[in-house]
Image (tube, rainbow, N blue to C red; front, side, top):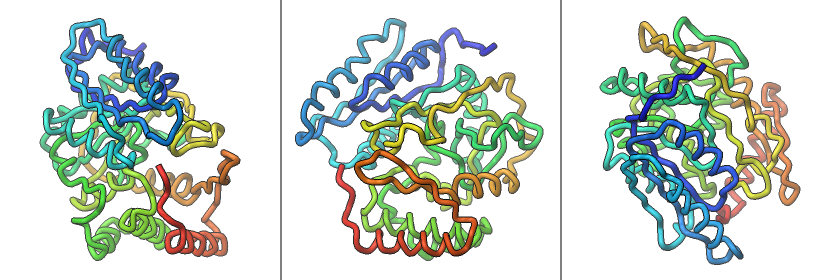
Amino acid sequence: MAKIIEQYDIPILLIVFNRIDTLQVTFDAIKAQKPKSLFIAGDAARQHIASEAEKVATARAIVEQIDWECEVKTFFRETNSGSPALAVTEFISWFFEQVEYGIIFEHDCVPHPDYFAFCRECLLKYRNDERVAAINGVNFQDGQHRGNASYYFSATGTSTWGMASWRRYWKHYDVSLQNYPFENLKKDADFYGFTWKERMLRNDRYKLLKSRKTNDWTYQTGFASNKIHGLFLVANTNLISNIGGGAEALNFKDHNNWRLYRKTYPILPVVHADCVQRDLDADHYQYCKVTLRPTIVLPLLHKAVEVNLNRLPVALLFFLWRWIRRVFIEKQKY
């Protein structure tokens, strides 16, 4: 049974926007821990979206449900940022200006109760260890336990859903990649020994972000860790469930995407690793299961088709399509 701390003493940032259905579930999980310090941030409504202002106001009213002793700080933008990537970056930077470490939840990321105690132990244990970039609660290992500890270390991480980290790592984050030349990207790929297919995907993501033809903030977290040759600490059980799929989602519009609505499991008591060392088997498994099986969203249908890039002809066609998309498709609208 999960242990609930009487009052949780690790700062938490909750990022809200225009959805109260998913937000309420995430907030209830946080509320059960009665955190001493809660930061809530949210972007303003987009003027061209009808009735969004009302939804945003309803989401922000979540602060009214804080009925325990808690230091609450809010950052609600008065005008829309024009970019979810810029907004989230601004909110997390604001968070780490005030705290040394903490947990970051978006509105649709629901943690298992054990995740809070797990993060607390790991945040404190690796507080001054520059090799550890961030803590991930999402696990895509399909029940395979890596190593003898409650977690393993990964070069690529798993997901930013429910990410915990330190100010020392976030200072390397660069949403526009202005301070991360392409030559450095290639050198870091050599350092980690990434395969050519993984390099192609990384290069494509990098160029899309640099040309601002994709509106994302998550890939940059991996680049920030690679920049310092760091590793992500990944829980050995899945501790986070993303419940935000559907037509209203910004990314996962296919409600049936296999990455969503996954079960979570207990992890306490925490067994710590003997050393900080990358688990190559875990990275290879995730590489084949997740990285090499990207999804293509079909416009207007809210459906996603999974593409298996393990076969060379399929991979070559996919990368050709990605090149066409990168060169000719305009920046995504937010």
